[in-house]
Each structure stands twice: as C-alpha cells, then as structure tokens.
Length: 122
Length: 200
Image (tube, rainbow over all chains, first blue to last red; front, side):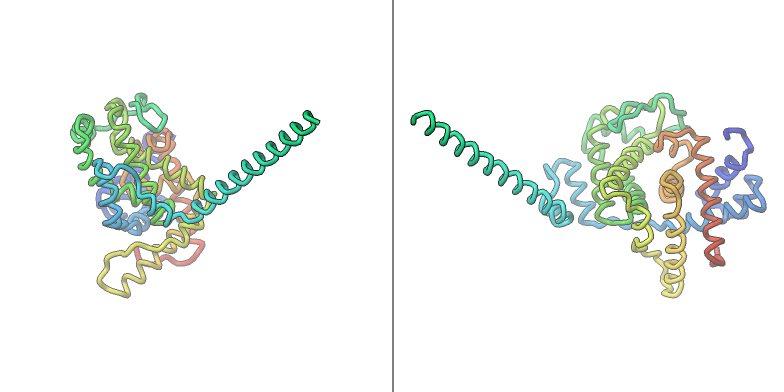
C-alpha cells in the first residue's frame, strides 16, 4: 500500500495537484495516471468543485468569538433550549417523574411509620 | 503532542513546518491571541461539520465545542508530531462523531436532504445546474462508509493532506491513500451507474 508508484499513491499526488489548482488532465498526467486513473481524478475534481464554502452565521461567529475571548461566561441557555426543545421536554419530564416518585415514596414511608407507631402503643 | 482528545501524536510523521506554530505559541501565553487561529479556521471547521452533519444548528454546536476544547487544550499542545490544524480537526472529528452518535446514525439521510450552500454564480441557470450537480454528488457521498466519506470531506472541503487526515482519523498516511482511492472508485461507479455526467 505504501509502495511508491502504487495507484493509490499516484492518485493522491494527482489530488494534491487538483487542490493546488491544476486541471484534471494536467493533474492526471503529472501523476502518471491514464484511463481509469484519469476518470478518478475527474471524479475528484467534481467533488472538489461541489464543496463550496459554507457561510457561517455572523451572529454565531460573534457569539462564539465573545465566548472564547471570555466576554460571555457560558453558552446561551435560552438559545440552546430553543434549538433543542425536545431535549428540554425530556429533561422536564424526567425531572417531574423523579419528583413524583420521591414524593410518593416519602408518603408511603411516613404512613408505614405512623401505623407501626400506633401498633406499638396499643 | 498531548491533547484534549485522548491521543498522542508524538509518533506521527512531521510535516515540512507548521505555519500556525507562531500563533499557537502566542495563544499558549495569551488567550486573546487564540482569536487569530479562531478566525483562520472557523469557516473550515464549520464547513467540515456541516458537510458531515448536514444541519446548520448541529454544525454550529460541533464547531463551538471544537473551539472551546481547542482553547482549553492549547496549553498542552506540543510541536512534536502533528500540525496544529490536524490537531484541531482531530477535535472536530470527535465532536462530529459524538453528534452523529447522539442523533442515532442519521448522517446519510441528512446529507441527502442538506440544503446546498449558494454557489455564488450570478447566472440563475448555472446556479440551478450547479445545485443539481451538488445534490447528485451529495447523494453519492452519502452512500460511502463513514471513514471514506471523512477522507473525501477532509481532503476537498478542508484541503488536508493524506498525512494530516491520517492524524485526524488515527490512520497511517498509506491507509488514508487507500481509503481515498477506494472512495473515489466507489463514487465514480455510483455516478456512472446513476446516469450521464454533467459537464466537468
């Protein structure tokens, strides 16, 4: 796999040329690829051209920049909640269920203690 | 290199010189200097996350976690094997992997339905053609295995070399070249099978 001159290595050399701005035909020729190898270089070039830069939302860039510079101490909790309402609902539901469970257990324990206390003093 | 992502890079091959090293050293003593690295890599890390996650909000989350982890760990970065950018993308790679795990392996579906970023063409007909081409390529990309897709995105979105991708993925440079070869062969076969190619 690491042998100099293997197809994978020559293809990688051709991709290096593409990334540096060469045309597919030139890149393939420089790397010594033809036929099937050249088709792979053309495929690589199609993908290279299709990945246009993705614009970053200015608001996000500013918020993260502020956070990294220490201006904002923590992430925007409200923003997180708005972006992930499902997680917020699940968190609330789990919290409520735990609360109900703990209360029910406490009521059950206290009623048992009260009845045991009454039996002892009869 | 000691890093916050759980791997040592000391045994990795060195590049011809890390162009970010001056800014990295400055960031290690002055937190404000990290802003230079942040501005340099924000769009590329974001693009990497977006093309793998297929969603702007998830990409923002992964990008934010990446830079926060990088800032937290930059004091421990040592110029002992890998470049700063491969170290940074290694962190981004882990954040993207976490995001994919937490959403339950919906990456391929997301990539297929991803809204294509604007190509910047002034000609509406050319813009439509470019969007159609991008959708076709994205569908083919979504059919690749995770490691092959990672190689293609890191190579063409972020311009990383095979050596740097090896650091990011924890593979040898040779293994990355083989992954790239197989990925391009599979993509060419998929595109050929789906129909005639539009003009290159």
